[in-house]
Image 1 (tube, rainbow, N blue to C red):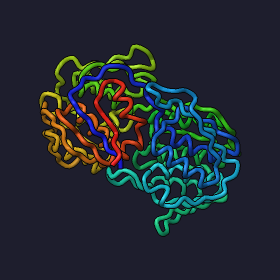
Image 2: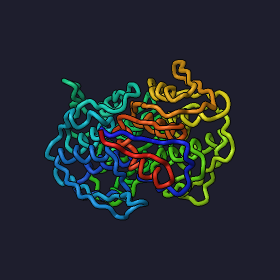
Image 3: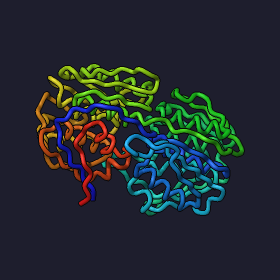
Image 4: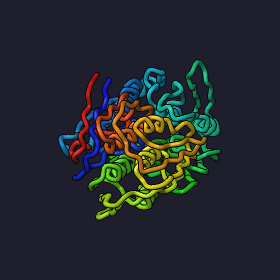
Length: 429
């Protein structure tokens, strides 16, 4: 099992290139199930969740052809390209062994039922950050005419032909919006998704589906309308940059000091993060539409933050924000409104010297506190990123166990950090 060893206290200088968004690539890959023609996707990140999805799709009979279009900095593969061809779907059952590490596996439910009339998918696994039930997926599919049963940990869905319906989400759900958006493209008649997610990843998926021939209006708003079509075609599509990776490297510049240029990103997707980091005292500028420059020349100052659905501050940046707040002067109140149980990283940061108190869905961080290297354990994807950030600021040696969590969503993060001066190594046990 791999671990990271970090020697902190080294300012970062240089340029980081951002990979494609894992949370956009996953639904775009699932969209290949909607057509018999080849789907060409570019800018896929080389992360564990993508590899897991490749295995899943091959189990269903989909052929995948992989290659790298362009080499990235420090030899890191970038702009990964794949041709996914679902000419025939030979299997509609996805067992637990394939989905136990990844909750996004539910994204294949809608496309499979829409295309094949049936699906059997194991209830998913993933990060230990609280309950993320798929009840909204299932209720939505039922409204579209599917018959749903849950037996022995498997979701079994059947439908002769999905029919358009009006679906109101009781709470905003990104994967639920994406799953039902894909299902609705092949449903008979009009589907209206209300209280839909507005995240850039949803917009990216809708852009791909439109290229495939789907008729979609209202993406980027809370009401999405879909006119079903008999069939979809193949398409070529480049996945958007990963806004969470870009935000993580902004935080790295803040906690380690120095200056970073972040290329191949989309600053418009990070407006809430940028404004909050500026409030903390980090200098962030956008010299071009695809780049950011971050500098930390002055002491950071405390600032409260509340996670919200897009366009608010993303829950996937909460752990990184807490790490940064440990170095800010004064108390910062962080309120988590999306997931319960998402402060598991706080105890590990306390082991490194942070002053953090948890009260329900709130964390009170008092800083600045000097961090010292320690042995810590990653509990989920974004928690592992916060520990890496803390290690960059800590004096001495930090050892992070279970870095397979970070491999789920960050492409070669240690190589990217090392290229800008960080002393970080991956070691196999």
